[in-house]
Length: 252
Ligand SMILES: Nc1ncnc2c1ncn2[C@@H]1O[C@H](COP(=O)(O)OP(=O)(O)OP(=O)(O)O)[C@@H](O)[C@H]1O
Ligand SMILES: [Mg+2]
Image 1 (tube, rainbow, N blue to C red):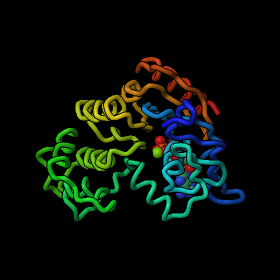
Image 2 (spheres, rainbow, N blue to C red):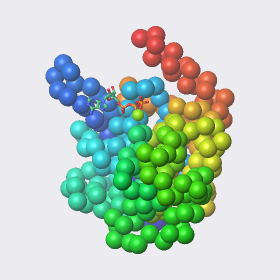
Image 3 (cartoon, protein in one colour):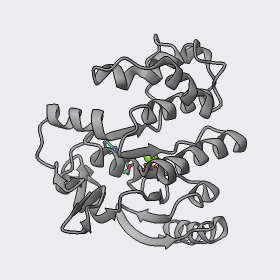
């Protein structure tokens, strides 16, 4: 999408701020984040535990309300939208992988994956759902309930669910956090394909430098602020920067 030849970013934040609580107990989880994510790019978000990564994704997805600042999706400022409009935006444009999966316990893996389509009033195509489950290595688990799946398998169901509507923007919170390295590689290649083959925009929180190396760029958060960026990241360069930031945090 362009306006007069200038591409419209998939996602922008301006002065994004989120403060939890009040008075002495107030926690400034996001302290004014300005970021632009071009369409068709893969960005990794890294930073120490508690640096605001999940809060950032939640605010961008309209699951959480920023205290101040703007969120702009495909050129539209959605900051003041009401819940219904935000829900429709999520349903049609965004795919979200939660840090703790959020699967429906009484639905099978295939039904969980198809759920976003049902919520959007469409009938899931069974072959497409099974194909997506196959791509995350769960072709033989379609009929299982979440309680019958391992943590890593549940995480992969959640990833397939986030991709099923082919959303313009995929927001993934540590999507490989519970996975062994072979499963993680499969998921990262799938996310890379979303960007390279379907032109989707992926924003992925991770603690893993190898996972981050699949992205086009890495941004670092510390204490709710931007603390650096690496383009064309390699795992080694990312790991070195991560170690440096961890030292700064420990030294305080
Ligand atoms: N609902 C909440 N109420 C109060 N404080 C919160 C809430 N959610 C998050 N915080 C605080 O905001 C800060 C950022 O939290 P956030 O979950 O975004 O961190 P994170 O970078 O995702 O960490 P991790 O790597 O451990 O997942 C933390 O200090 C956290 O304690
Ligand atoms: Mg988090």
